[in-house]
Image 1 (spheres, rainbow, N blue to C red):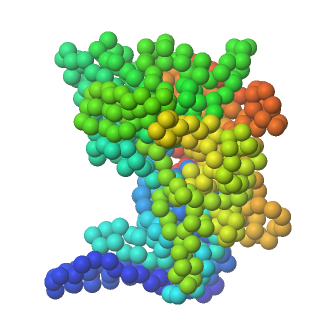
Image 2 (cartoon, one colour; image 1 turned 135 degrees about the vertical axis):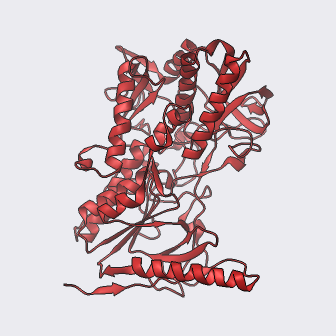
Image 3 (cartoon, one colour; image 1 turned 30 degrees about the vertical axis):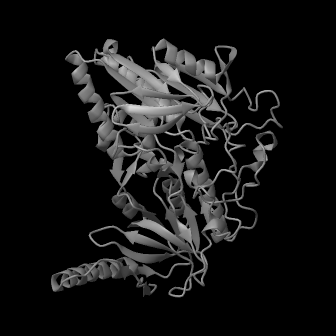
Length: 528
């Protein structure tokens, strides 16, 4: 029987103490926290510590496979500020009242406990890749939330940054659920959006007319695909509730053309024809009598009023009763320091706060962009024991052509890195780390988005008999005009269809991926 090692992690308390009662309260909380740290810190001598920041698709996938591939002498720890896993693609249905919160989430702690993964419900604050004056080994400082936030270090030998994005609602005045618009980016946002939508349905049943605006809340938004999915589902729900004739539905987007989706659009094989995605998307919206406004940047939002400008520099206003506008994304704002305390955040992170990896970040015009610019291993060029996965890595540039209006405002869709690519990157990074720990020689595994294909099933209405969904595949995600000069992609694997079968697939994927995320028997047989 091997001896146990007791690890006590230092921490600081940040709270005002203004009275003896406050001091006693803080003392009690510190004692409880120290007791928890002592208990959680009792661990067998481990060969290596792998820390994953974030428990979304990329982080959860990486942690799950690391624990599966590595023996128990290695410690796998997940740090996430959220207690629950959220299957975000189904927030579209949650945001219209078609699903409940418990159908799209589950608690992480029992899953990780069963799998042998350590879980810290905390928020990552700073990375010390060389250690610090207080702790010689590399570590991340995390903050445990509560009445008085408590900060402490989590040591690592390998670090995966899979923190996902910060929802930058502040980029547009008046944007966000705390102000004048709705969102489906989180469970709480989607739940509030559903309530707002259903309240308006009741108003329309009583004779009111309402305008719904769905889309991008800034000129440089990501995830236009999610906004498109929400608007067609909203239109479907209006019909299901019998109030479609009393509603006006508008899709507001920063895309140069509909169907750009942040990947420069695509040409797809459909019914024996080659169709550009802008025609495909325009047809879907036109069939549903959904108006569209493209090339738009939202300047600000007031109560019931959107101010926006377009690529031509024209300014407009639009009234609304409900506006579900997605925000632009940035990194979560991690900082980084050398052992000496010198800040090195700009060495590890791009200006947008996403982590720089092995991509080509040289600034150059759109005409000189190459598929080879995109990262393959997602390994930090500064510290090779640090990786980034999913949305947390910094793209070398966008995929879609960038545009600016006469006032210099950038208006174009930024690169998506969610869903299937995030999970694949999480798994590949985990495999690279596992191989290093097992003593295998060779370069880390690669998963360039210019070499990966992706499948997307976008719901266009929920219902086993009346539902529909657009099913699309692209290969590769980032077009490569050196390999595929005419279309940038291989049209044998770039396809699109819409129909009831797509909805069945979407529902099956919902339950299948939640089953996989809960690490149920056979989970690893389900592909990313």
